[in-house]
Amino acid sequence: MAETKTKATAESVDEYIERVPDHVRRADAKKLRALMERLSGKPARMWGPSIIGFGSYHYKYDSGHEGDAARIGFSPRARELVLYLFDSFEGKEDRLARLGKHRIGKCCLYIKKLSDVDEAVLEEMIVDSIAWMDEKYPE
Image (cartoon, rainbow, N blue to C red; front, side, top):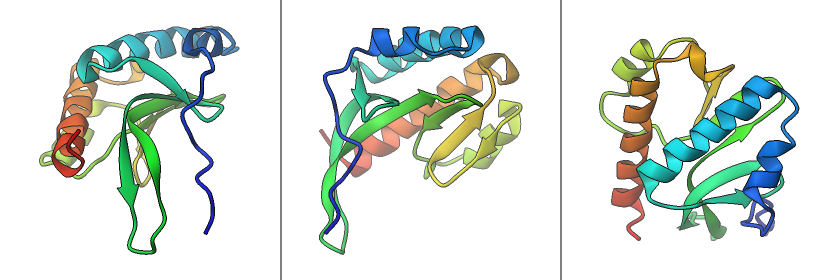
């Protein structure tokens, strides 16, 4: 069975953010960190080399594979911000319609910069993602 590659590390979140080359992405990362810390009540922690996560949960698949992952998180990648949110909450389509410029993946929300989206709607989505995680994976 494959080992989980993305694990919590002791790397400094502050140092990682300061190394983000694009100044807009770096400023957005600082803002997202503060927002996610406030909403989750959890301190930022590095997961693998590039994900900033908040809190953790333990999962186990039917295949027997199990591990730990961040409850929510984001990564300030070279081309865009990737937010790791779980999207099984009610009202998702309405929120995405109101969010602004974005694209979505399986459990990822991609945005170029925070100024492209309605930050109040983004905050609603983060709160809903945390609530979904709390219900599915109680702490």
